[in-house]
Length: 577
Image 1 (cartoon, one colour):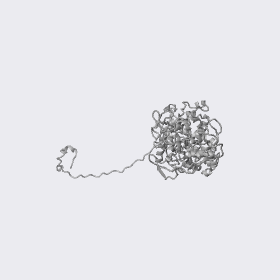
Image 2 (cartoon, helix red, strand yellow; image 1 turned 180 degrees about the vertical axis):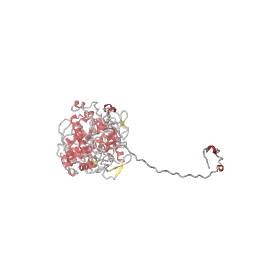
Image 3 (cartoon, one colour; image 1 turned 135 degrees about the vertical axis):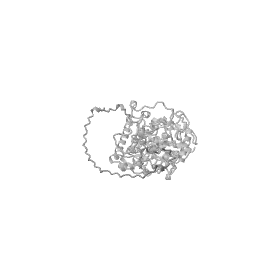
Image 4 (cartoon, one colour; image 1 turned 30 degrees about the vertical axis):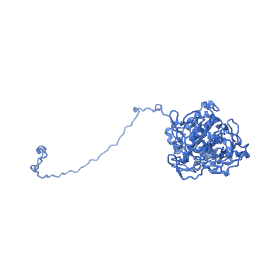
């Protein structure tokens, strides 16, 4: 059986000492989904359709469901999802060797997510419709999903046909800036942007088998990218950070094995090493010996359905009143694009509070040369024999290596009851009202909007601590208030204006308005005294009218036969001399 480069690298680890890394020979090149050419997007959707028909989409949904409580609410979150999405990507490469998972930079759409191009028919489609809220546009329209039962792909936006604002790129940049280890980064992201997108799209995305929706893979690939961005912000401090706890509260480190996979955390830390054979468009010089695609695009290219998009490099397009008219008019990633704006306009106290690395000028762009050597950790990954499948699923249920093969074995059946939280009574009482803007803060022309809060059901499903959720949400709202008070204008804020008519405002009852009655009898109007006006006597000169002399008229000479008139009857009083 043919081994892929991933498993050649993994097998080679058997002869290496602890902490040593094997370089991938090729890397999947992950790009923002809107930067894909029409041909690339067509290839991607073709591969995904084949994977669904072969049962792979449902397979990964079942794995995510079975290990849901160990994949979340602990520091396994980032490394285990990195392994999961690489495993999914590796299956796609079987169908087309140039396949790579794209990501969705959803922060640029934060102000009005439902208006995102990604949720248009040209990409993954939008809100569901009908009794079952089936998605009727996008490449997954018409798909039959078979896990946990046969059904259509469904979405149910969190605010009817719209989605309230989520977390601004400035806030995500702030989380990256303030986090000094994984134990800080993980809850900062998991309890903000991660949950917001799952709740925003709803239905399939708000279940434990959410990988049925390709939005899951776009979203989690972006979260993995953000983890990599954070690793590279301060490589000496962040790159090998693997502290925190597992789902049972036990401390973890680089030697801890990931749930389901058994892979050491240390073996998934370095993109381009140890089978993590991928890189991102904003880090194309990091990773293995070469990427499958080079970053040498022309200035613009067509997107599915027509139109042009700029290439992915760095910076913002033209701003009008400090904002983008079109959030697609951006080169680079949103969290990086706002860094220069933040550094230039925020007052020092706000900058220091929310962006300590920018305040201290720690904004160096690092490369692979700055990544420290891996610390020693206990053991290398287990040896894979030549008969092992290139899939990471158990060998008893592994598919064959040929394209078109399908996973076998019974997928776990989900429990109808979601797991309880740390405090079920607290969840039952949980209610977080949504206030789009703080009415006491006078912000910029296009103010930053508060993200919407988590829902009770979402907290229950993950077993989150209500107090921890509330603390992170309060922090996000304080950030928004501080940014608006500083008159900071987010370049991505304009889209929120379109949502304002949809926001639920308190109703006003006319009956509750107390208007004092006015009695006209009580009105006292003082008399008005006008001064007397004396008009002068006008003296007109006498008028002398001249005597008019009329010529002698001979009436007999008048001939009016056509009128048939009696002239004498017409001029009875006329006396002519």
